Image (cartoon, rainbow, N blue to C red; front, side):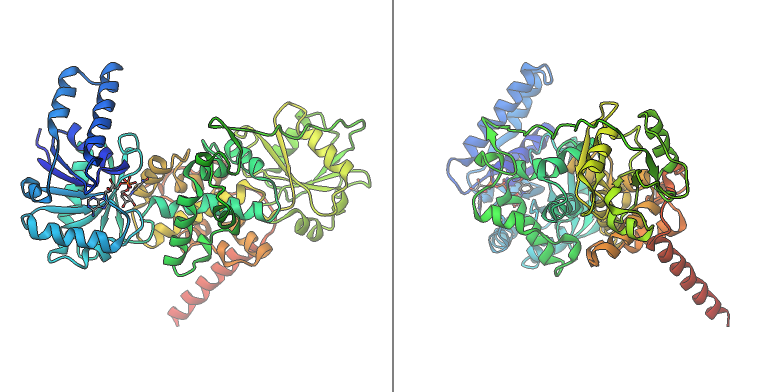
Length: 543
Ligand code: NAI
């Protein structure tokens, strides 16, 4: 088979360099590994050999393949040996001055046709290339840790990168068994940019007192299908890694509110409460296992009040059917009786706002998050408001838990937990598309493979309905007055017209989710306003 690069030099034999060297050797390239620490290369090669031996023991590699791989991987005693290479991949310390100096040095030693790439995760590819004589042959090649298992690589074009260089790197990624995605040189590229929504919005709602860390984790795993909750994830990556990334991307985008970090992680970082690796994070760890507090018990309720459901509730008929299945006595009057437990189901609004707007007694009113179909969720989430009576809270908790499905009771929140986190993720992804940082298809691939989300963020937006996500954001903006929640034009336009967020899937049926029946909300005012604006502009152009 034709290999795109026959001989590959890897500079830096740390966690990333050794993984890259492993998959390049497996692809059949000759790989030369260089590090300025005297023992780093030996250690890296021993570790890679061990990996191959383990794969052979599991029957995933034949002894001949192991032999061939080992013969491909060699140590370079000096950078001059890279003269033989047609690609050099840098994976050294994350410092602009050190990387620039290395590439300048390399450029004076290797042939002008050699492709040079950096594995930087946070520096500008264009800035690293600025020191080069031939920046056209330079690109970003951003792998993820651990490289052999994380099967995606971002190919990043700097301002002066030749398109053919990116095409060759993409083909080579495939030969190494990886999926290449192409990104413009922007802070965080695709994966670290798209990943800003999950943790920052979860931190924000916890800092608002909506619920505790463990409850937010449970809700997002059980309602959306994330493998790890945001706080489990922060514990795993450790705050000395993730907090600086949050700050760096926020600053590089000139304090864009959508990426705003949290004082919670700043404090914990300052206090050395870093996560799993220090045994102390959002969770406490015993021998690497998180200690989990039991969930609050379902209260015993002697006499269950009748239930009245707002006429404007999202998924109202499903909600009524659910309550019927749970054996509730449902009131059908135009307004609740004086005893009724009153249930609302807003999108983006908090329970307080809905109770006031609908003139409901807040003491008896709770909200339920109906963004996710009840059949599809493993947990129900209900929210109180500051006036909710404890007997009404207990009744709602007991009622919604009657069939054994776990119930989380949270404090009032514009968008509960799931709505606001999903809407933030979808909105950021939409803006990545709006800015043309990558194609929608590459965005979905990068996020599912690089972040392990159950769905790509655009598919997530389509699943819950672009118009619903738009409504959640509009209404959250009203509740919080924070430009963080302003919808991206990509979402605003597609949500308004009723299109899929993925252009390739524009003709897909959008199912029942495309618009949930819900409150006559700011979203609708917003959509009406949007339509009016278009009409005015069109009529002007006709004059
Ligand atoms: P590491 O600290 O494990 O390894 C870096 C290696 O580079 C060390 O062995 C060091 O001796 C060597 N080195 C430093 N300066 C050198 C120089 N001037 N010449 C030759 N060798 C030199 O670091 P890691 O984690 O492998 O990261 C390497 C690069 O990959 C960084 O740019 C990092 O931002 C990026 N990256 C890291 C990821 C991760 O999860 N660790 C993920 C994606 C990218």
